[in-house]
Image 1 (cartoon, rainbow, N blue to C red):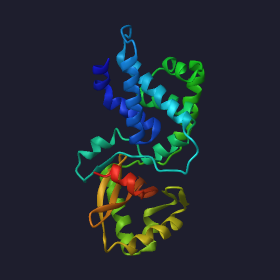
Image 2: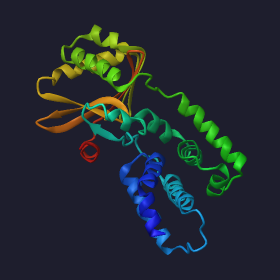
Image 3: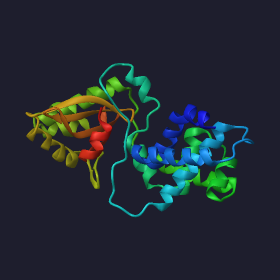
Image 4: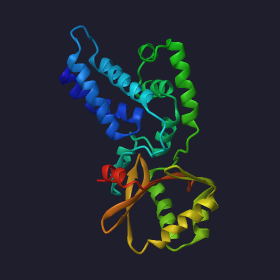
Length: 269
């Protein structure tokens, strides 16, 4: 079964990442799952992939239930640097920061039911035993989570179009052009940076205009962040900020900022 585990590792890590929102925790979950698989009697298992999915799901569920209350931290998105068209293919299978933030707000059982069923097509009959509920109850948990997820900001244009809007945002920010920023931001735009949440295009624009203060020393490198357009700001080659943008109909509806040095060091290539 260890060989099957290695064959499934990429998919299992994706499950753990969506469940936990952290690549480091996802790797810990896989290590725990690997040890459980190594000790288990797997001689009667007919569907190794499905069984491994439930093992990883159970480990992640236990980790979520054991979490203590702590200050809000931005989840870990997948970061792909560069502007090449092939990134569009990568983006299709990525989960944006807005999605990860919503997932982090779900209760553990809701998150498990939604991630396994909606993202990885695991039947509710297989999910129910993991949470100690009936398949009907598991279905209800996933439905409740789905409604929350569907309300998140989502892009409706392709990456090249998203980047044009991000370029306009950068230009206006560097020039300290408040009205230019207001024009590119949706009136109900949301800016999130750690525990900080700013709502309203003009209010966000006032915050974003601060970028002009370090524009002379910062270099913005375009990136695909969780499948959406964004950039990494570097000073002397060292990343100090990552910004992901959600673009709809030519305007920015959400900006997510990561500034934690340790998190950036782990995320940025």
